[in-house]
Length: 312
Image 1 (spheres, rainbow, N blue to C red):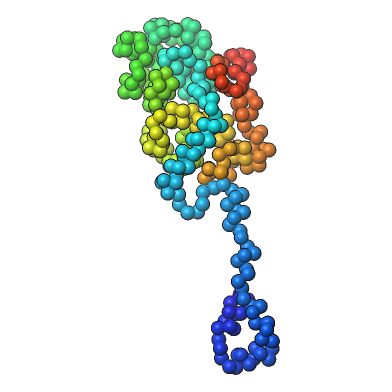
Image 2 (tube, rainbow, N blue to C red):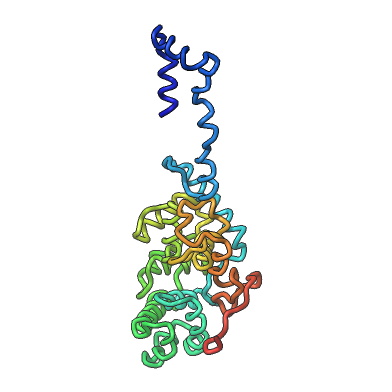
């Protein structure tokens, strides 16, 4: 308010005002009312921007989003150079079965269950001929064991009758098997056949929406949006890295924002705990000094193997 009146006094050259000001204020004191120094004393935007690594108010262009997404992928590759599928398997059939079992349960529980399952039914032919009640008892720890038994016996029968007992290496064939959808097919193709694929599970979908790579909820649309950002050669490993990050740091209910190495690239920073000490306590698996989900992890995995069933 003071600066406005001062500016007005300067602008009007009428004699009566001039003489009035001369009688009250010495001419040398007039420059005092200039408001030029005020903006320098309040540089508020800078501290705000550095304190919270969120996206600016200006809408992000598609090109900027793609560059940020690819940088996140590079950062995740450095953070998780050992990223891998967290299901134990020795061949395509075991991976297919383990992935079907992983619905509505943890990979750890699946890994603790499959040794006994594959000892009893090592091939599709063996599993197709199983006594349902006996298989149900083996896979009971994974939950929904009756529905899963039906799916496993159905897909094993289809493999035996339609594919000579071999797991097919094409998505269009895999999705014809009972209990096998696009997500399961991409897991098998990417990790058993080396065919690039994006696996959209709950962790992947949650993170790519937090990072504003997509706003879609439907997994097929999410897959299409993310596939358009990255070269095909990155799809499989990108899936592992994103899922690893979702399980270890960027959790569903309480993300460990204060301990997240990619926080400056995240437009959703602040949804979780931002205090570094408190955030570190939220880290899981090897990041938190605890075993991962595999009983037989790959050699370069830095964490401890998970315990067998009943040994937790």
